[in-house]
Length: 323
Image 1 (cartoon, helix red, strand yellow):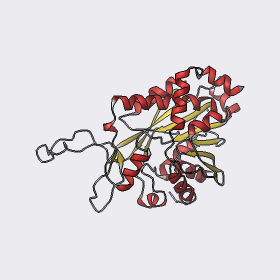
Image 2 (cartoon, helix red, strand yellow):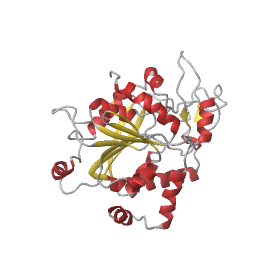
Image 3 (cartoon, one colour):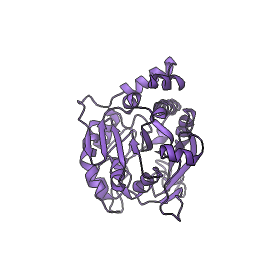
Image 4 (cartoon, one colour):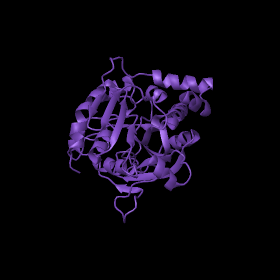
């Protein structure tokens, strides 16, 4: 009954939205049989669809979200993943090797059409509306994004009822942007079509608190960020090296974030060090590994069976890394 009331409050009686959520939940990326949940310490990894999981999760049961979701929606589809594994074609850009290093592939967000962007907005809106009742008041949601599409996510998530609370800037050199015009490198040798991206935005949202922050902290253990130390506030700019080759070997996922960075933000989102971290798009399990490393409980959902299997093997190895 509580779930029905929450859904009615959020507008799920609307047939169009219900169909939208059902469509995303039914859009499975593989027909392989589901795996049993994997547990390690305080971490639980579930192979399944986060839309379905959220629709059945208890209200007020999660204290924070840290996640790196798909952005083109198509880049993690079966077709695009097969192209990525073959190393050519599709939405994935395979950078050339140079300086003796092989760069990780990146999704080409500039190829998204207006319809793709509209679908992306609907995806995040439907997801955020399902997420809202599952979080306790004052719970923070940190979403990895990129400068080209962060506005879409911000609009969708705030429209679903969350407060926008700024963003964390991960200062890191990326392979996005900075290129000369395609097929005209020599003619326009001093031109960059776009600025080289040297930062990554992590959008910050919060479910509205109950009363004052101090009241919310006492009741729900949420509402603020945990400081690195008593004298040092948590800051919104974090210098971060690209994910090291050693980590990528342990957890071969195209969007893997480094443990050194993840552990800082994962630690910060539970202000009193109590509660559960949730990653609805768990990938190779790096958020769960970071939560294990700092001593937090965590739950992750991964739809793709192959990435679930990678995460199951990678979480204990990533947890053991020294940063």
